[in-house]
Structure formats: structure tokens, C-alpha cells
Figure 1 (cartoon, one colour):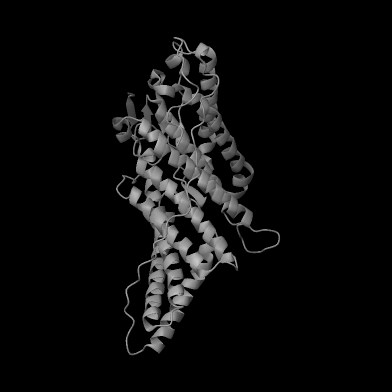
Figure 2 (figure 1 turned 60 degrees about the horizontal axis):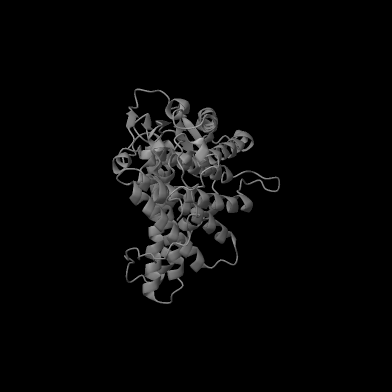
Length: 427
């Protein structure tokens, strides 16, 4: 069913990690890098030379590009990121998309060929330096994960504030914000497909031995993070809109809390204690606290619109909770940036630029006013429960592509005749 080899972290030396990754709006927990494999040796007795050469050429292109550029893609030096890194991401994504339909020929209809090649990838979040598995579904899973991480790095570049010709303040354009939401949904689609359609193809033993980078909890958390950051962008645009009501902003903020809470639940018990993994855990904790601060702020403003002493007391309690969560989020942000590889915050913009000014100011103001009004009873309300809204933002529908036409019966030694489609790739 496919053998497994994991190399301990002190045995390799292939894992290259930057000391600093620069400014981070969207956290990408490193890029797993594929190592070369010899398709001719593994598949030469079963496949035509043309298919073997096609597989080799497509994967070698990925190995070279990922090996050379992968370690630099997660570093966000602005000039190189936009002029060079951005195109590198697009080129590597295209290479992976070209490879996937040909790779899927190894697994169609349960072919025995899926166990013939040992695929090796360098991990980032796992303690093991690298993981080798003789199972082509492991390769498919690794490809989808890398495609999603490249998209998240693309979103990070889009969401780094820049100074424009008509403004002295760094900002993120509305065009970049809208494009980033599309990217988040596409990345979430790759990860959702990995969880729902690829992981189930792997035997239970293989799944238990996957590196933590590819653990179901991490894949689900990354999917939820992408959706949570997509909602954050939508909230920022609502804040900038004169048409968006408080109720709309509160709903978006409450949905954001649920995405980040679920992301944290998925990785809470996983061994993310190694470099990128520890930083990943810090990022989720920070964003979860930040989301709660946002939701309680808008909930407090709506409660304050009530005309009773109780509603005003609950409003103050909600705003005080927002202030406390905001203070805690700043501490967690510092812990995230201090964890290796080091990072730093870009200039404040969007939702948190607005709320970093409003939460402390409005909380202080509402507490003072209500204490003046109700001085006979000190306000000791606990924070009210946030409203529960269904989650509106969903991953893009992504299906594994059809097997490449080069996988025809006459090209396969032994005369296999199978339909040109991957079983299980439809939702």
C-alpha cells in the first residue's frame, strides 16, 4: 500500500529556513519542496517512454523552480516580491497545474502504478526533515498543498500596504483587496479538495504517518484561515462603505470569529512545535483574539442603541471585552513576530487600522458615560454572548482535473484499458 520513510531533522540539511520573512499580512507556513525521483527506473517496465519522459520533465521543472525560488517566496521584500517573486509564484503554480493531470494517470481506477514510485518532499512544519512515500496519492496531496500555499503567498503580497502617487499613507487598493478574496477562496478550494477527495484515498496507516504539514487538522485549519482572512477583507471594505450598516459589520465580524475558532480547534492538539509550525500556532491564536475584539466591538455598538439600563450595561460589558481581547491580540501578535522565522507587521490598514483607534476610544467613552448615568450601580456585567450566524463564505468548488490524454491504452504496457477519468474526483 506504499512504504513510508521519514528522515529525522538532524539527518538531512535540505531544509532551508530564512531567519526573517519580512512583513506578514497572510501567514504562509513555509513551502514544502519536492526532491527528484527517477520515473524511468520505477515505471520503465510498465509505461511507454513518452509518458515517462513527460512525467519526468514536468516534475523536474517543479523541483528546480521550487528548490531555487521556494525558500525566497515566503520572504516579502517588496521590490523583489512584486517584480520577481510574484511572477515566480505564477510560474510555479502553472507548472503544478500542468503536472497534475499527467500525475493522476498513476492513480486512475486504483492502478497498481500508484505504488511504484517513491515520492520525497522536504517538510516545513514537521519535525522530520523529509517524508518519502510510495503512493501517488501522497504526491497529489503534496501538489495541492503547495498550490494552496503559493496562492496564500500571492495574497500576502497583494495585502502589503504600498504608498501610491496620490497618497502619503501606505494603503492596499480596493482592486488588490477584491483580488485577494478570490485568491483566498481558490486556496481554500484546493485545501477542501485535499481533505474531502484526496486524504480518503490514502490507507489509514499512511494517513497516520503523514507529516504534520499534511495532517487533516492542518489542512482544515489552513482552509478556515483563508476563509477567515477573506471575511476580514470583506469587513474592511464594509467599514469603508457608507452603505454598510452596523448589523452587516457585526455579522461579518461574528463569522470571522467562527472561522478562526474552528481553525484553532483543528490544530490545537497537533505537534506544531517546530519552526514554521510554532509560528503557525501563534498566528491562529493572534487572529482569533483579534476577531473576538472586532466582533465584541460591533456587538457593543448595537447593544448601546437600546434604550434600557440593561442594554447599556451589556454594551459596556461587550466593549470592555473588545478592549481586553484587543490588548491580548497585541501581545499574541508580538509573540508571533518574535517566533522564528522572525517577521514584522506591515503598516496598519483596513479593519485593524480603524479598530485600533476606535476600540480604546469608544470603550473609554461608553464606560464613562454609563457610569455617570448609572452611578448607583457599578457595571459588572460579564460579556454578553455573541450572536451565532451561519458562515456565508465557502471554498471555491475545485475538482481534480481529468487524466491527461497521453494516458491512452496503447501507451501502457500490458494493455490496460481504463476510462480517461480519475475515480472520486467529482464532488
